[in-house]
Image 1 (cartoon, one colour):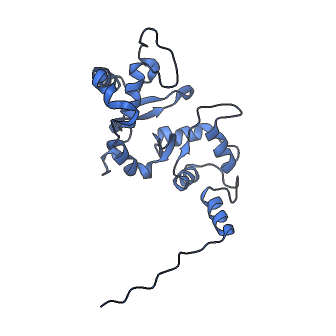
Image 2: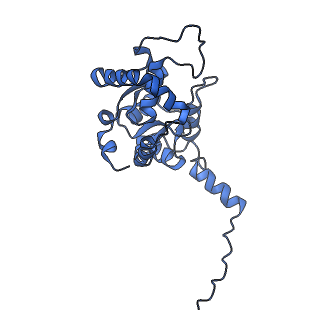
Image 3: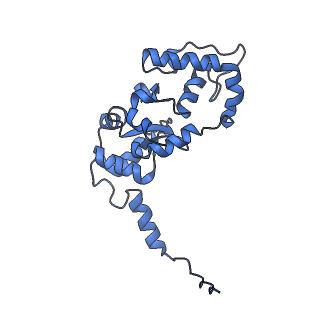
Length: 209
């Protein structure tokens, strides 16, 4: 009869060690020492999991402050090139809209393919708007990158505007993005433009999720 194994005490770490690990992982142990390059930006986003894109602009949009706190002054056009041209980062809803490392794409691809129809009541919406969804996806396939402003606005009579009270085409764009059929191509004037996922990142999409 095998003897029971002695219980192992859980590891204990000092608060100082935990704080040091947190600061190092967040790239705040030596802030603004490294300049922003493709390598340093991707390393930072890989370590933190994603760079949240902030739509609110008071002093400055939050993601610009986040990058400044790590790298100091930097060229915003370089970030756009790294994310939207070189595709070393891609945009997805990773608890909020974030730039996520392309190296993490297979894991997020699994989330895209498993995206629930219960989320945001998509099942009910799709029952009434499958034709809208199909026409929006076909338009992107035929014309290339498109955003909400490229589709006419048909809000129901008497309905008010609001955070989620979008026109049908905007809902369709959001669903196509969340389910991984499209990806964010670019953000001119901070407005998302979408293109087919297999056209933007064919190698990443072809990998096993």
